[in-house]
Image 1 (cartoon, helix red, strand yellow):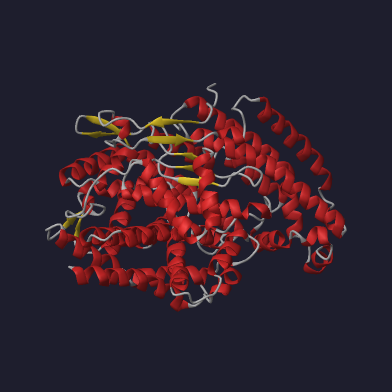
Image 2 (cartoon, one colour):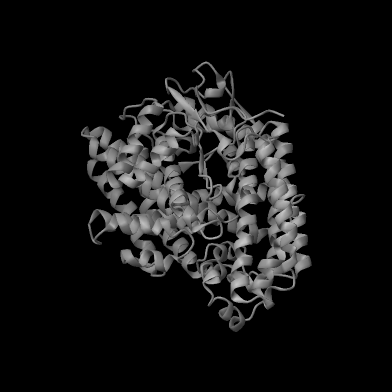
Amino acid sequence: MTQLHDARVTNIPKKDDPAGGGAVNLGTLPEWNLGDLYSGPTGDDLKADFAAADKRATAFEAYRGKVADLDGAAFGAAIAEYEAISEIMGKIGSFAQLYQSGDVSNPERGRFYQDVVEKLTVLGGKSLFFTLEINRLDDESLAQKMKQPAAAHYAPWVRDLRVMREHELSDDLEKLFLDKSTTGRTAWVRLFDETLANMRCKVGDEELTLTATLNRLSDPNGDKRKVAAKAIGAALGGEASLFTLITNVLAKDKGVEDEWRKFPRPVSSRNLANLVEDEVVDALVSAAKGAFKDTAHRYYALKAKWLGKDKLEYWDRNAPLPTAEHRDIPWSEAHSTVRGAYAGFSPKLAAIVDDFFAKNWIDAPARPGKSSGAFSHSTVPSVHPYILLNYLGSPRDVQTLAHELGHGVHQVLAAPQGTLMSGTPLTLAETASVFGEMLTFQALLAQEKNPVQRRALLAGKVEDMLNTVVRQIAFHDFERQVHDARKNGELSQEEICDIWISVQKESLGPVFHFDDEYKYYWSYISHFLHVPFYVYAYAFGDCLVNALYNVYATKAVPDFEAKYLDMLSAGGKLRHKELLAPFGLDATDPGFWRRGMKTIEGFIDELEKVG
């Protein structure tokens, strides 16, 4: 099996290399060093941790059936041991996922990942009883245990654990769901990931990865965008039957579990996991959809005018403005731009950002076989996060770097809360990332004196916000309709495609024309399968940050930086109401989301003034 290499940097492929997707002169791009987790997939350190986890998980089974009888001190000690076991297992799982994502097309890495998942599932089954028994404690008995300092330390974790009480099943059924996941959802998601990673798009005389081809949709040349768009549609269409099957299977799988757990709607389990009320999410979705005409429809009509068109083709959505300067942005410039934006807000955040660059916590090249998109993996508190990018030098890639670094600094700041309480609900997990994007945008805007380039920057920011809010809410609506329709039977390829086109027309507006192949574009959105109903978290985060940044920019709250760092450092200890209270914000207020949409409308107002 291939061993992990030491930390190093590598040059991006040149223009005539199809793996590079046409990017040139980007300089040296960092590759991450996973050695801070383990030396490699066959390393003695990994074997030792597996053995330690197995020994401790087996010993932990002595608590089975006895949680109710533990006094407060013993209860706290049991949670601490559960956390320690979770930390080891989380470290192993993080390494396996990161190692595989570096080359999803490699069958050896795929087998290693699957083996790890199966072993961790067995280990997890040994301690599954513990959380179930905690949730079966009556409130009075639990309150007595929580009076002891050792247990009280974990009060936020216990609080959030018990939100699932009404939806948990017997020990045997819970273990069955866990054991079957390796041959169910996990296996289907792996098939999807490997299919995308192995996919090649025929772009003229080139064979490009999906990531490289998607990058071409931002090319200044309309003909190149069209060729790339058609190639993506053809490649996705060629796998449409498989993607349709995967979608149907996983939607049914979720439906079966939701029925057993008595969740009223497909989105309800995600909302509960996010510790946010259904009504709050409904208000967000309603506000965003109610603003489609005043945001997306209005902006894209402007863009059609700038491009000299009556209608926009779907491949024009991310086209740069014709009067803007177009160039590839070297990695060194992206680094200095984003780092400078963070430093201008907070020296403490800038110091954390420096670690990501200096210590090889980022994997940037867009290699063939590499997982598409971008993410920041929190790993475990005893290590540090890792960031995956597919950097090809576009302005959006710079914003993606800022976005993922926001996740990264958030995860670093929250790490002292420990394995059980450092995690943040998805609704607030996007706060630091979107705030980092806003800092970077405002820094760039302040530096730009050329009015044409300023318009291009502003338009780019509006498009990013529309992609984050309007597009993600449209994704959410698509997902909702697919899961609702799946309750009535298996969906045909045509039915799923029709839902996709319908929500795209509603969200993007009448100025767009969609060729037939665009109907397959739903099939590469990995969030639908990896984390069902995740996507609204982006819109939640963007609208929340619009309000939060307004508080910062207007100096409406003293000591904003300190309060902001405290919010990120809290991890999962506090709910959204408590975290936003110091800033005078309340996500349960229906007007809160409308104000977030007004920020986008304000930027479009400014663009309309400059013509």
